[in-house]
Length: 221
Image (tube, rainbow, N blue to C red; front, side, top):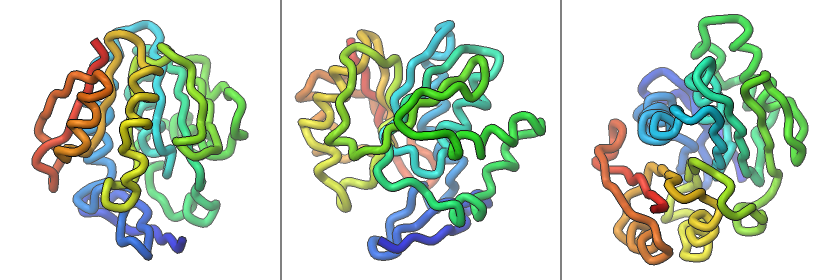
């Protein structure tokens, strides 16, 4: 499927699937959305732990991973696991402008390193941030039970890939979360919320980022 890099309303870049018209991030602001959904309503809920284990459904451009690294630096050790079936190309990577998010040179090089390290083996990005990129489809990836403190559920939208928002997928997400764990996602469709509740999640609706009235935080109690 053809993809192209676009600029969103906050000046940050994203990728658009041309056949679908679907984008990897909100057209109202890629960085703005990622900070709101995954950092504010995800990472901030668990960052008080000395060590945080995160699972991301959809590595994509690496923006969520990079923002997590920047936010957690000096606060917590992070083990970041992420699943992606179709990695971005070198050409796409060059066109993305997330390097500007970092003020220090040592942090700017981390973004590229997130993409350059090998897949399917845990990599030490910094002493406090490890990355394990799984080159696979969500539905095929085996996951360890009770492993993660936090899940970033960042799959493509329900209208485009409804199978990724299924009871089977959310049951897998629930199983791999620790008790007290959190799942955060930009989505807030009734059918998605009902599915998450069915597998055991406790749902909280909160205001979404610009362009979205609500989003969901789900808890494993």
